[in-house]
Image 1 (cartoon, rainbow, N blue to C red):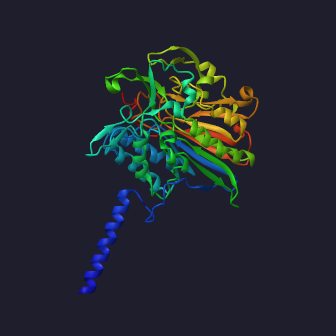
Image 2: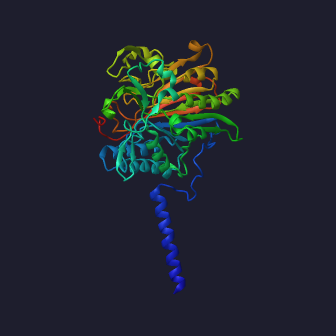
Amino acid sequence: MRKGILIAVVLAVTVTVVLTALLAGCYDSTKKEGSLEKRASLTVRDDGAFVIMQLTDLHLTTNGTYNKDKQTLKWVEEALDTVRPDLVEVTGDATAGSPPGRDKAILALANIFEERRIYWAYTFGNHDGEHIKGEDGEDVWIGKEGKRNVLSEYAPSCLETLDTSAGEAFFSENTRGNEEVYDLLTGYEYSLLARSEEELEDPDAMGVGNYVIELEDKSGEVVFAVFHMDTHGKFYIDPAGNASGADGYSDQGYVGLTQKQIEWYESKVKGYSEKGIKSAIFMHVPNYAYRELAETPGELNEYGVPSFDDDQEKAKGLVPQKYADLEFIKGEGVYAPKWDDGLMEVVSRYPSTTLISVGHEHNNSFVISYDTAAKYGSGEEVLLSYGRTSGVNAWSRDIPIGATVFTVHTDKTSATDIYDITQVFPTFKYAEKGNR
């Protein structure tokens, strides 16, 4: 009798542990140790190729109880089953809104990758961390009301182009919300999301999720590197004497990359460049180079930021011939920071990075070429890409959703030779318009 009771207890405990692991989204009983940057590496195929699928701006708010979220999750499953990529890049705004809906949504997404045993990387957008759980469990919106960080300490280059005479410049503290999402995603077997030592030392400046994934050949030699960086949220000017709280702040657009992030990128990419190893960058908000090439500055808008004319013909003229048949869509402006953060100058000095791919704009989908040598006197061609918006619920989306697929040929050296770029689209009907 005692033996029967013991077996029953063991079975009950085992079932409980398994169910707990599944509900938590962790398919490996061994959690990944620590949260420091991991020297994550994946192996390329026998022919040197490696397939990356970019999913961006999913804008999930539930785990499928909302119909548009259900359609988005169905699309993610179909896209993965169609492409079977070696790596999925989720480039920000995968979720939006407050806990617990945010948490259920991000876990539902993670489980789709884990069930298929597909490696995935995550970079944070401007909406992922806009909300946090308060001390009493209540929802706190920190996108505009959280602790603020003085820009002069982290992004001094922006102050050269901003008129801050009216008040002090700050940027929103999405970092706390991003850290909550990060904690949810630690421990997944196929997640490669990581944090660098530098960002743990100064999260205000670095944000969450600045890390590198290395691709190796079968002999263990590194043949390619994939960078990830947090592009933060928005920044504001607090007018002198303002007593009205958040509503009195002047919206100045997006932060993008800070000086410390550029320094971190330079410290890493220098080594790859010296070894002749090529690399790519995946992040959410486009950098100033996109504005430089794709648009013509106009007058100051209501936020005191230059408006950028929708110059499709200018952008189309920069599409490399190899990608001429790839659908070109420029349906809205380029909402990049208005100042040059210095990224492209570093890219030109250490020629390694041959692709930057972002999300953020829900109605832009194109690939253009940036000639660093023409501007800086050194460097090589860099492809600037907008990943296809993947979320049915993406705000003000007017174009069909899809996913962008990069086949990386790690044995090539020039940007257009390295990347074959295609797009895949749902085979089922879904809501034509994004949330409004």
